[in-house]
Image (cartoon, rainbow, N blue to C red; front, top):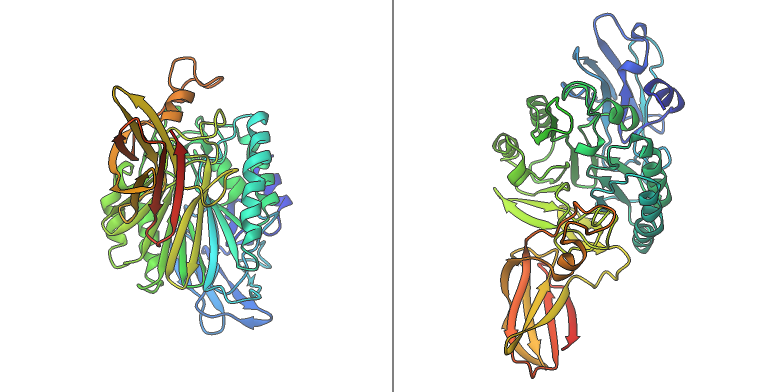
Length: 469
């Protein structure tokens, strides 16, 4: 579907609220580039609502009115949905295009939530990365019902989702299949751009995201829920040569982000969603961290790596998620042994709790253990895939407490079995096991009959796994 027909078909599109400037004849906008309007809810003005074109960031006045002078390169205008209001969606995809009423006029109407949203949940899907119909079928048969069941278990708590990139695998014809998956889950879902969501034959970085934008709106924006402020960014810079890119957040985005955050309380919970991990793969991450220096409660949600890793850098917690697709839909685990799955987050005011939900497995399953036989001894390996330094990992031999397991870099045994070798896995042998630091190891006497590992997360919740040797 081309961009024009898609936009004409859509009447309401996002949650930031996206308006494509290129989809309307220029005559609808004032000659001097000004767009103005009003934000209302139930017929009453809503003051202090943030509106942006990706360059300027302004707020509605006490009467709900605004006026914004469009940047010459602006492709969209959006409203950063305030806390307490519904995200507007089309088949659960968070996107609402609004046509201006008259020349240079653009009004927004917000629908209040039926409950307080200080407590709410969100889900992070990283790298669904479907390439063909078989991949889509797996996603529909496994990931979708699993996520839907988790959402159902949350009852009436407001919940939304964010896809942090590589929604598809260079096959844009499958964007509608991804959309169908989200529609079946049935919650508002936002999207971030991944390197496999880019046009690789459309010039440089400024044009490589046109198909994505036609389908999902702007590649950077913000929205609010409760006391949390959410930001979605594009940190994939296409370098103009097919499939060549790096991790980089453009100065335009950083300038916009600084303006956006000026209007956010410094004690807010700040959730920043993007594709490529910031801590070690975004070239100008120092500039990015500088913009965030006044915020003390920041969490970054990333994907891209196809493994699960938690990193704290500059006081910022980055959750680098395992994938929805596991080993590119060839096996049930990622390259580090993390089961394919997604992140589940619970917000209470400015407090955040989380766990990793493995597709098809119980929520209480947060580790796998292996025992192998060496010369004159046996070895225990535990993979605690959502480990961070606040976790405690202990083991028991035949019921006797043995203390903490030693952390060790290495390869998950099942990942080696499934993926190591030139011909494995079929049909995508490029998938290979990768070293991870969330392995834990101990050696013990061959006479031991039962091994148990207890992992306690930073929130005090305990998870157990045991094996008969």
